[in-house]
Length: 235
Image (cartoon, rainbow, N blue to C red; front, side, top):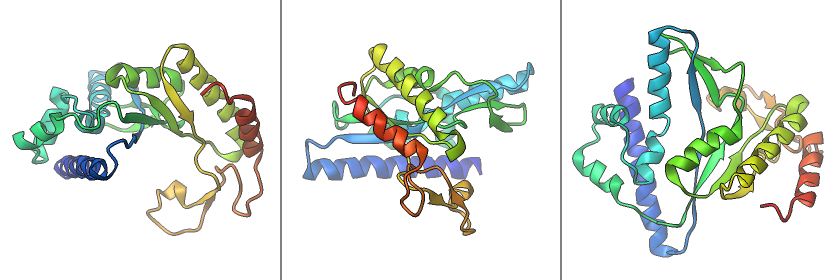
C-alpha cells in the first residue's frame, strides 16, 4: 500500500504540473491557487517509536507541494517516491519552476489538522492546538508565496466560535507580514455524506455550511456576512 500511495502521489503531481503547462499556454497570466490541508504531528507519548512516526509525517506532509513548487523533497520523501517508481527524469521535471510569481498557496485548516501519533502510526486529533497562524507560518517560510485561507468549517453548533478563532488567526498572519490574499468558509451550503468522505451513499447531512440545504442562512452565515462588511480593507 505504501508503494501504491507513492505511485499515486507521483502521478497526481505530474498531472498537476502538466495541467499548469496547458493552462499557461492559453492564459500566460493565470494565477494558480494550490489548496492543501496544513498539518502538524506530535508524538502521543515519550516513546522513540512515537517520535519517529511524528518526524516521518512532519516530513512527508510537504511532499506534494515540494514537487509541484519546484522544491527538492526531503530524503525521506525522496525515498518514499522512489519506491513508487518516481525516476530521475521525473525529479528533473519537478525541479523546473513553472508559473513563477503566479502561485498562491491555499491553506485548509480544520480541527483534524493537528494530530498526535502513536508508535504504531495511529493518529488522533491533538488535544491542544497551536492554531492556524502557527501552521501557516511554517508553510510560508518554506515556500515564500502568498497564502489564502481556502477552507475551514465546523459543525453548526460550534461554527460561529470557530469562525471567530480562524479570522483572528488570519489577522495574526497579516500582522506578522505574511501576504494573505483571502479567507474562505467552506462550504456555502450543508453537504451530504461529507463525514464519510463521499465514499458511501447514506444521505447523512453535515451541517457545516453558511446556509442549510433549504438555503436558510445559518448563524455562521450571518456572522460571515458581518465579517465581510466590516473587513473590506483588511484583505
